[in-house]
Image (cartoon, rainbow, N blue to C red):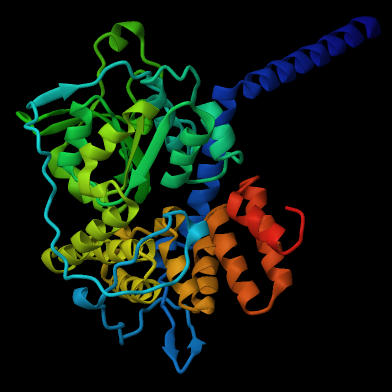
Length: 467
């Protein structure tokens, strides 16, 4: 009896080990593990956001008097909202680069805004659809690499979002990839070229698609799941349009992930699948959230064709000026509070691009002054995950404490504080105050969340330290 009991007990241990090994092997499969990680992080995030709703947090810019900055962060906005800049007082600067690494203050005077949509000179057909895109459902927080990978498949790139993400966001927790990073990836890691610009419009998208160039945009997005997670940023790839039904055809990595077929398109559906519908009427409001930014990828020999197609948007300066003028018109023409917030935010973003940081800071002050009037459930509290214009505007206006406070609030409101840009700008401001120790710590933290992040690496080298 003792022998049989021992054998029976041994078999139980063996089966337990087998089950554990099989479970570990199953969990180690990338599709399974990514979903486990996704749902566990989502559960943690939901609990934290329930205890400390990020939409309740309101940033209050400092008052700037006699060269001294006084700052406060509270749940209510200051009653004396800064006077917004007049359109005729705002300067036009020849932007050296839209990359943050090249931002340097300067100033001149511009003409008054005269923005009008830029029609293409060539009559366009009413219907165009580009094919040959390999669709990819995105992994967690991976819409940038996934959408870029789909874009590059049009040119037979032969790789997936994993290859793009390995460079663009080596830390999977990174919540965003900037447009300039996506364009840099194409220019540095493929044989293709890419450019990105602010100030796009529907006609520009249609002209590019008609010429055979898909267009990637970043836009505001409300999730379609049963439990809305609020406003967030998202990339889409525009591959077609139909004037008769007023729709764009888009490839959407998020919708592919939640499609009825579970993210993997069966062959019988693939044969007839061309993309998702996105109406013309939805485009402007969704795209406004990101200053109408777009990315075009093309073979090097077609660069002149692309520049001719986008016309006045061909240069950084021209695109930023057009985007600024459009934003200023929208500050007075729009009635919805959140739309007004985005319009003022876009004005600030465009002025940062034009290197007029003082007026950019005033525009951002106005946007932050409007923010508390937005219905709480609709507040775009994630905006600093994707847009860093306020940091540059306040930093180059010597409002260092505003940079620190804004970064503190942005990082503190996240379930996981993973924004390398926020650490970078906070580091610059600590350094401006003479606190090198804190600055270096922030730079190293930014590199933990984004190994190889160029701006932090360059700053550490400038300080004579190893990244």
